[in-house]
Figure 1: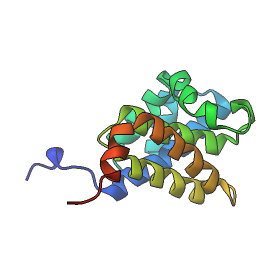
Figure 2: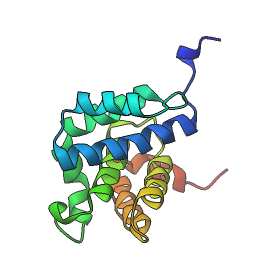
Figure 3: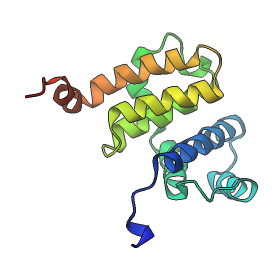
Figure 4: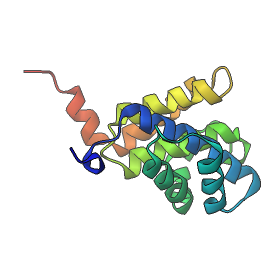
Length: 154
C-alpha cells in the first residue's frame, strides 16, 4: 500500500496540533519568522509519528487568516483578544481554523482536540473556556453538520 495515500492517524494529527500550539505560542510571543520556527521544531523534536504536513499547514495558514479566525470567536469572548492567555489563543485559532477551513475534520473532533490541547497546555479551567467558545463557533460555522447530527436515527 502506498503510504502517501494513507489517511494520517488521529495520534499523528494530535501531535501535529500539539507542536502547532507551541509553535504559534512562540510566534505570538517573539514574532520570529514562521519558517525559522518550523525548522527549529523539526530539528529539536522527534516528529516521526507526527503528521508533519498538517503541522506545516496549521503553522503557516493560521497566521495568513488570523483576522478572519479571530473574528469568528471574538463575539463569544468575555475579554479582549489581547487579554487572552496566549496558549488559549493559539488553541482557539487552531480549533477555529479546523472548523472554518477543514471541513474534512468533523466539528466534534475539532472541539474535542481543542479541549484536549487546553487540558494539556492550559490553566486548570482552560478546557472549559475553550470548549464553550469552540462550541459556539461550530454552531455558527457547521450548521448543516450539526443539523445532520440532530436528526433522529431511522
